[in-house]
Length: 267
Picture 1 (tube, rainbow, N blue to C red):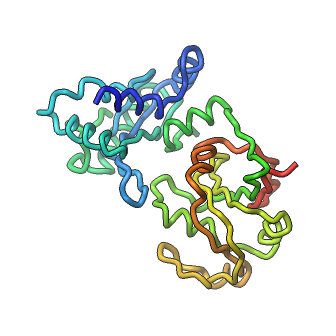
Picture 2: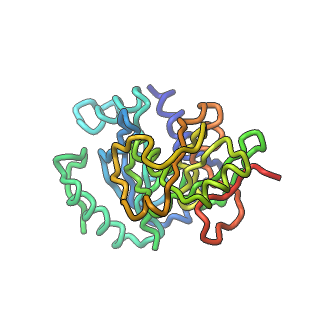
């Protein structure tokens, strides 16, 4: 169990030495969520806390006391590789962090969390801890030419608790001819679903088809938008070898200047 916990800590906070200290200090006080990752890759909060430094990792220590339901839950999720940590708010003072923590516990309902008590009382951006690490430390990654494609900016529609199907459906469509042309002209192989610069998922593009050709399960296509945006792509998740290279990283790309599709991986 200790080996699994140590590995998880390194995955959640992949920084060491001075970089680790600099990152944690930059957060000041923050509010964090322990999340259960379900079968659809949704991140369901199971515990909400606040603090500074590496407080968010402290709940991974001393999990031997099995009289605690929280410890039982954490151990189970660690062994099943379904535990992660999101940061909901950062860069605030202690009073503000306590207020946010309290509001979040009330919103979720304490009966739905492993918290024993309620809380006490523009950096409110929930995202996985390792992705926030890349964002705060400005760690960008350049797409290799063999993985060339388009970064599809999903800033408007994305929410942090989206599952795999929801994320795919807001990425694959629906798009105007001008955006489709960007992908086709460059013979884009992959679509990088990108939110605030962070790569959330990567899809192989098989072909472009008229919008509505494929069924949508998590969204209703607006007829007015459909008239202006008559295309979508057929595809699926990229191979794990490629996803492991880029997911959660900050993509190095040109400025969008209002465009939703940005070519990446081209000279």
